[in-house]
Structure formats: structure tokens, C-alpha cells
Length: 368
Image 1 (cartoon, rainbow, N blue to C red):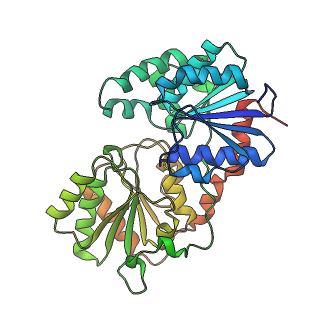
Image 2: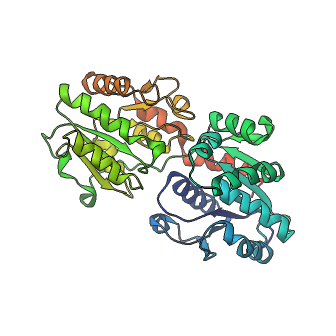
């Protein structure tokens, strides 16, 4: 690859479904389209977004069982290829990237990107490993050549939690996938969106504690009493069984669907009556921006951090307190029944990939 100022590596665990993975693929493709030599370095090359990687981006599979065990192979990669800069995403990958540079003794610039509220995600994590990674962050992050956070809230939290000077952290909002004007792909069709069907409330995300789909389902139960509608939640995760049990206990089996992970959610976003983000915390909330880009009215919890920045304190959609089922139900019902909505597509244009890529390249210290 060569230590030229047009060679860049992007290091992430895998391309399993998630906002961080999707953004890194978008950035890799955009960098390559501008003439940069790009390696997408994966601890393990697996996941649905592999098919989205452009042909002029080289995928490097380290073949490791997990991120931290990929360290020796990442060291060998850096010594062999010597990219000018390497961008990493997700905190365990960030720690591994900084350690790999130290061990490899190369001049590669390491830029780490933090994509979630560190203090909240660490508090809720199970097991010892997340806490070990958190401690390693405090030791390694100050030695990164650049630190990027995807929202001001994430940056403020990272500075306080890890002990980094706030001015060292650059805020770059996530870009959204360019949303196609034509959302009529038959492979993504769903009978609930047929003409004359009740309006659909949509949630998208991993079925985890962070996304708090329990509150969304309970809020929907209240809305359903007053308004004929349905709820669909796209995503997969460890809480599927508990969420399905809640749906059954509320007698909502025929009105709630959990179809699983969907690689292209835009068909659903462009046809939903309301998109709801019910999270307890976020980094920026990519799916919220994607829903705006699809022209879908939105309701979101005012969680740390991101939604209030994306919606500019409620200008583009209603914000409600985290975990407040009654407030969430009221906001959804009000959005369903109002005659006009903000021009949310115009707000989504502020999150274009071209603008984000230019700012990333600036922090990476790269220019052709």
C-alpha cells in the first residue's frame, strides 16, 4: 500500500448490521471515489454490508475470532502495508488500533471515532470486558493522532468520562446513505403498506436495552386504543423473545410485526406514517436522519446524545422524555393526526456523505 498521503485504512470489527458499519462502508467508498487507495480492514470479514463495498475498495480479512485478538494480525498489516492514516470505529477497535501502532512502530496516523455515549453504554454493559475496554480507552485515546465524535453530546461525554481535553475532539455528524427516489423495490414489499391499509408506526434498531422498544410497544398500545394503526419494528437482537412476550401480553399480536433485520429499510421509512426513536441513549441516531431523508415524520426521545441536535430541539419532530410511555404515546398520536409536517427532507440534506468525507479526510491529515 505504501506510506503515501493517499493511502488510508479503515479498521472495524466486521460488517454485521449496524450504523457504524454502514457509515464506515460509505466513507470507504467515498474516499476511493476521490482517488484514494483504501483498505477496509476487518477483524472478521462477515456481515450483510460486505455486498455494499465498492470494487475499488480492498477488503482485508484479519480472520480473528474477536477484535482484541486481532491485534497481532493488525500489527503485521501495519508493518507490511504502512498506510498513511488509519481510521477506526467502535471503542474496542479504537483501543486495538492505537496499541497496534505502538507495537508496529510505524508512522501511520491513527484517528479514532467514538460513536456512542461512553458512560451510559459502559454502565449498561454486561460482563467485565466492556469495563476493561473503558479503562484502556483512558490510557490509549490521548495518544491518538485524532479523535472524532459523531455528536456534540458524545464529544462532551467522552471528554469527561475518559479525561480528554474537549478541544482535542472533532465533531463530525454521520452521513446518511443516499436515499433513492424510487422506493418501489418489490423485494422489500410488505402487505401492511398496501393501499387502504391502516397507517404504520415504524421503529428500527437492534433489539437491545438501549433501543427501549418496550416503551414503544407500550406507547403503541395506548395509541391503538384511539387510532387504528399498526406497529412494525425492524431489527434483530437478544431481547426478541421478551418483546414478543410483551406484544402477546398486551393482545397486540395482529397489530405488531417484528420482521427482523432488513438491509434496506427505506421502503418502510418512505411509507410509514411516523418513525419513532425510543432509545435510552444514542450517539447520533443515524436511523433518525435516514427517516428524515425518506420524508417520514418523526418522534424521538430526547436521549443523550444526538436526537436533539438532529431535530434542532424539536424543530423537525417531537422530542419526549426517555422512558415516558404516556408522553411518547401523545407525541405519536399528535403526529399521526396533524395535517401538515415539517419539510424533513431539507434537514436530512445537512448530513450528506460528501461533506462528512471531506471533514474526515481533514482530520486524517490527507489531501491529494
